[in-house]
Image (cartoon, rainbow, N blue to C red; front, top):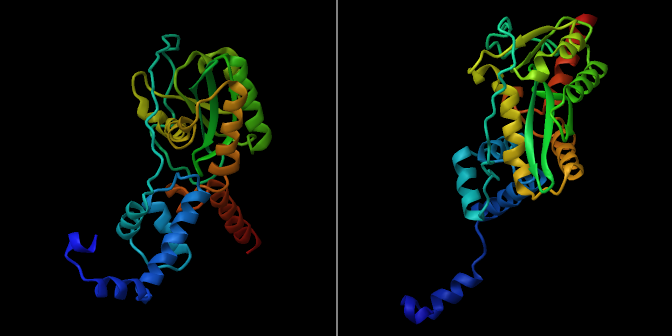
Length: 275
């Protein structure tokens, strides 16, 4: 090898005996931290989030450097584009109003909830994930999986969310114009809320909840060949309750998890009330 590279034996042995520089030690230390953060977050974090986590550990580093190190380590954020389809439900009421009007940044928790349903392909057929997200913190306040798109499933999730949160105050419940969300049973379940609906053919109003559903597929579900509804439910629990709400940092939440972001809000308001 040395002969083919036109290198001397003395230079080769000198290189093997040479101790790593301080810079080399630091780089190795950062490599280990990057690998640890990457593994702890299921390979989901890319360079920006890993850079933020390193800075929380008082390591001065740029996103560009983290990106370079990740390429050298053969790491990349898991990003698998899921196969999607688009369906339209013509059963909606012409009088449905868009109360939200793209106001995506409420000042307090439980001011605006989004509800939506997405599908998860499994070996046993489609499983449907319905989620309610609080727009203040992007926290999933209630969710469930089912093998049908029935209104009854939606009503159960709404009741679950109302029991967990402060649903007695006036809040906006936003959705698309699917038949589950325009039924009389749905309106009865949300009678203390202000119902808001995306405009026909205008998906941007529902962007936040659809973004979450795209996220759980892209970062987690598309890694697996899912057998049935039971496995789909377990995987959703592992991502939503054990990771997304409690651990995964979110740019909207100033790089805190949704739960930590809400906790900080309540701590600050408690201090104001005491004062």
